[in-house]
Length: 242
Ligand code: CDP
Ligand code: MG
Image (cartoon, rainbow, N blue to C red; front, side):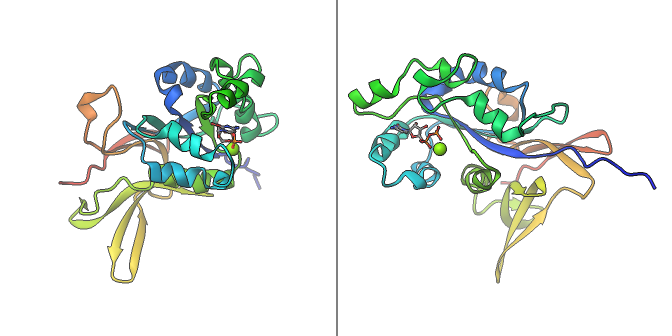
């Protein structure tokens, strides 16, 4: 009997460009490219504070928490769902490599070659000026965190009244320990029913929510998924009819 190798991991990481990182998004994403691929990108012109409060709920009692909230208020941010590259071997695992690439919370302590080193801010300055530390990006540090944090930014690609194939429901990214997919969530009497819109042999390559991606005006307002089925590339239009 032939023993087949375990499938390459599809481990996801939730990543976010914070307000001070937004003007440097392309430089940051260039640094990330060798390490992770982009599954989904969602820009927020003004990030919802409710999502940010939930993202940083663990820090609610910390002295810097109110400053952290101020830092995001009325500011743009970009959420990403990344995943490990299938052509890359991660010596200490995907998360460890990614955490190393992002660098220390305090940019003054971030090593050369790390993303946070691009910031000129320091913990010392931020304390003296009574504001949050500007360190460009957020990243989940464990799969557990990703499964909690990514849905805050990706699971509502919805107008409540949206319709897909005639049924009222919700379209969004589906994240589970097994990998990613696209789900369609239907409101039924007993609550919510979730359908995976991808077949078992279909691999999600990229998902763009119907609000559209930046810099691609033609695609504005369309939800698209790029998938692969047995090596063949498939583009699906998942835009909910209005
Ligand atoms: O982001 P990271 O996981 O490296 O750091 P954290 O300790 O979880 O803190 C979350 C975020 O709070 C940091 O990235 C900073 O933006 C902010 N922070 C701050 O403004 N001042 C501090 N003294 C500590 C954290
Ligand atoms: Mg943290």
